[in-house]
Structures are given as structure tokens and as C-alpha cells.
Length: 347
Ligand code: KG4
Ligand code: ZN
Image (cartoon, rainbow, N blue to C red; front, top):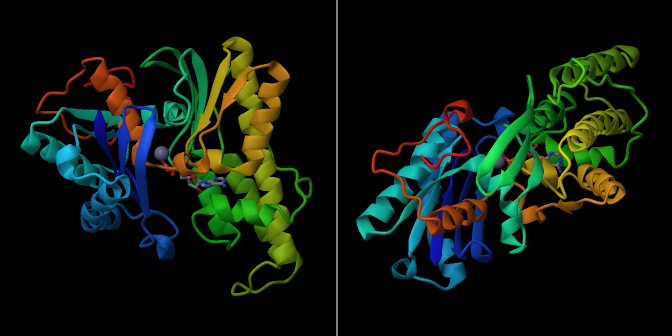
């Protein structure tokens, strides 16, 4: 089944064509640069940019797959969670296209896209598994006992991991998005230069808390500026930024790996998925690899192209759910909030 996937939940306009859940024929991701000067995603600007970009992005995906619209047999689009204006653009486009052409349509949960992204490269991937989903909007530990069955076993109480990277990127004057620039700066710094705090939650909790770490980095930046007598318009010297970036990255990754290990003690499984935009982080990939090797667990890390938001993972979930006979009523609408949108249910 040739399925067109569409993803517009945040600031990536993406379209992909798949033949079933495991064969990607094309995957186009257009990252909006309109937000760079604001140091974060501006929802209204995101929605307008999706409106401009989506049609050409879908056409490019068709061209790269060597297909025409007439050959598309099903459509899947992200229903949520995400920015409502941004979601409406891709969801409305996909839903209308499917209706006009009489094609089956799948309304996909973005998080399930990240969770099942391993199917894009490994047809043998299957539950049960434990997943660490780390992105700009999410920091979640999820257990999946069977296909499309999920239990949330831990999540962040404040900032998402990617959000922490993004805020610290701005704090250090490294730019936005923070993940890639912090990773790059950290490579030249000492991870033990600063000892940043790990959040202490009640014993047994698998939740995360990252806002204290962000505050600690802010205080450290202010302290170094004072020590060096820097005026407000002077940036911190490169080596100072590198040390702060490396120490921050060390603290975040350490917190994630510690939680993952605790989760595995209580929920023993044979497969672990680490996915979402932050799964592109080299340090996290390495540490998760070492942990899973030590415990004899198979680790599934999507290739870089499928770590961040992409329509291929949305099409894959759509293909899987449609093949089980799931259908969505005409009244289905996007939902911004995950709490109102349980992962398990189709509609
Ligand atoms: O999954 P994603 O593309 O979008 C959301 O659903 O949020 O994730 C984007 C996030 C951003 O916060 C970005 O800073 C982070 O992923 N990120 C990274 C890296 N590359 C992207 N974080 C840490 N290290 C990286 N190499
Ligand atoms: Zn995402």
C-alpha cells in the first residue's frame, strides 16, 4: 500500500511516501528558519510557514519517490500533540486530500510516530519494548506491552529535555535550536568543569525535573560573567562556553540514563527505543548503547534522519493502524494536548 504521510505538528514541514510501514520511498523534511531570530518557535509563524511550504514539500516527496498523486492509496497525517495552528494545516490538507480522492485516512499520534520509528528501518521490530522519548516538547518513559498499547511510566514535571537544551543554548549565546550547537560546543569542553545538580524526586519516581538544572546553568553563567568582569554586551569566551555546555550536557544525559536504568530494573524488557529529536545527541546514543550492552538489551536508535520530526514515522503508524482495519470518523479533528489524546486509542 502506497501511503502519503504528512507531519506539521511544530516547525518541520514534512511529507513522506512509504510502501507499507517498512519501506520508505521518499522523506522530505523542510525545517522552518523563520523562528531563528526569536530563539524559539512562534506558533502563528509556524502555521503560516506550513501553509506556504506544504504543497511544494508534498510535490517533492512525490517526485523523489517517482510517483504521481494518482498512485497514492492512503493518507496519514499527524493529529497531535503539537501546536494547534500548525497541526490544522497538515491535518486539514491530508484529510481533505483523502476525502476528495476516496482514500483511507489515518489520524496519527505524533508520539506514537516517534515510538514506532524503528519499524522504518527494521521490519522485525515489535513490542514488548520500553521507550525513552526525548524531544523539544516531550520527555517520556513509555512501556509498550503489545502493538499500539502504551503505558506512561515517567515524564517531566517541568521542562522537556530538548527545551532545556534550547534554553541553555540561548543562555550561553550559542543560538537556537540548542541541541546541535551545545553538542558541538561541548566537544571542546570539560564535562567535569561544573558539577550541576541532578533533581531529587521522591524515591521510586521515574519522572524527570530539568528546570533546576537550567537555573543552575543560568547562575553559573552569571557568576562567570561577574568573575571575568564582562559587560552586558560581551559574550563569554569560547572555552568558558564549552565547559558550561559540556557540564550541562553531562548532567542531562546522566539524568536520562539513570532514569532509563531504573525503569529497566522495574520493567524488564528485551528491547529499548530511544527516539525524538534529542536522540540525535551523540553522547546520549553512546551512553544508551553502553547501558543496553551491559544489560544485554537490544537498543533501537532511529538513524539521524528519523530522530527529529518527520512524516515517514507518521506514515508508518498510519500504515500499521489502517492495516488493522482502524478507521477515523469524518469529524476527527486535531488535538494540541496529549492528555486529551490517549496514545492507545485510534480516535
Ligand atoms: O523531535 P523534534 O524534532 O521536535 C519535537 O517534537 O520537539 O525535537 C527537537 C528538539 C530540539 O529541542 C533540539 O534542540 C533537540 O531536539 N536536538 C538535540 C540534538 N539535535 C536536536 N538535542 C540534543 N542534542 C542534539 N544533537
Ligand atoms: Zn517530535
